[in-house]
Length: 393
Image (cartoon, rainbow, N blue to C red; front, top):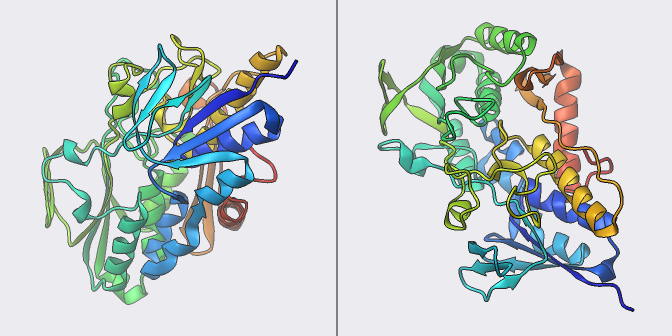
């Protein structure tokens, strides 16, 4: 008797989606999986490298793209360039914007969340950012033309269940730490003296997701580099010349925004969310009501939203699904931790690994050249390997 072919659909082709696809290919025989991966874009931009807009020409983004079509072919997956708009969980079908519906036996939700630019009055992509390649190109142009003034890095709030645990004011602000420190290191001494660098966050402290030791070292680093910090920020309105806060007005000659995190419209439309746009999951990343649906990465209720966490979640989810298929013991569940690895310029990097956010005691921190080297090696290895690292986390 022929073995059944499992119809596997992966929605989203960034960190979480590519890692899910690579693990499926490593674990499963090709003749047992009929794989499809769906994304609106035929290439994946490696977002962690977009911070180098602070010190590179706008064309640098071309070197940080991964051709998803090529990766899918190598993994024996079909790539569909489209956007999922609804999931019919009863019929096990995914409805797409411009293609016919896809049937699935197992579904991996890896689409992330849509940016909530609209949730702050006056805020839109024209004001600057880094989370997409076109925004990084614009920011690189601004930096190249910079002649001094107030350069503001701002991170939007995380919109989620107010009773959720852990409760963070922002879902991911590590990119603004990294980019603000890289700008400081990239400017000439004369131009740096003419520049005020601000970091604005709704969090009560810098590095809210980090452990106490790491938070202290990060704050110490930013103070030593003369980066102004504005915490507990309550945004009222944004205009092209600055930010209106409850506490007053902060003028800006340039801005870089990490927009608010507002969850997934797809999860809301499909009634798979927690009421706030995020997908609830169990310890193996399964939806609590639909066990053949796994959610991985930014779309889940887990915070903060980090690439490393998405890759670990992908491994746990795929291994758990395959263990069920093969009727073998389930793998260990997902144990969240916060791993921060950023390039801070001047030949230095910042590394932190902690579990204190989740009630444990690990709080490791290192600042030095080895951390910068590790970050840059990881960046290149990920793009060179097209998301398939020699050693997957």
